[in-house]
Image (cartoon, rainbow, N blue to C red; front, side):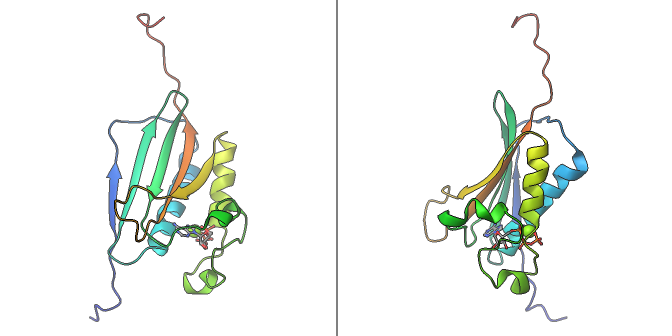
Amino acid sequence: MDQSNRSSIIISILLNQELEFVGDADRLNQVLVNLVANAIKFSEPDSRIVVAASENADHVRVEVRDTGRGVPDHLKQSVFERFKQVDPGDAAKRKGTGLGLAISKAIVEKHGRAIGVEDNRSQSHDAKKGSVFWFTLPKADEKVSADEA
Ligand SMILES: Nc1ncnc2c1ncn2[C@@H]1O[C@H](COP(=O)(O)OP(=O)(O)OP(=O)(O)O)[C@@H](O)[C@H]1O
Ligand SMILES: [Mg+2]
């Protein structure tokens, strides 16, 4: 078999603790799948993608970090609009319709939270920074214990 077209991607999942959030599992899975698929699509072969989740008092935050070509500042809002692609060649070359992020935004906003993209600054060398696509979700209700009341 010809191996020359094969490429690999390393996906690291960072979870320090079990996080619980409220939402429609199928829909939220769709958001995560789209962000990971995008990260793979817009990264070089053999690069690393990190999926991480954390929480604060108000929400759970999930992020997908890549070291790919990144999203220019002036398109950081509009990539979440339907059919908006950074490069007009993305539709054909990268096989996409430009709907994934618009659908993801609608799903996350239906859960009352937000989605966005930032530059990936976690790289020590700034040759190719890539992007961090993040979204937040409502935390599962916590019972306040008698000790804390
Ligand atoms: N991780 C990323 N790095 C760089 N650019 C990205 C990344 N994710 C998305 N983009 C840019 O945003 C555009 C919109 O993404 P979106 O997921 O909506 O569409 P798509 O992946 O092109 O098509 P679809 O998701 O409908 O198959 C992409 O075409 C690409 O130009
Ligand atoms: Mg997509």
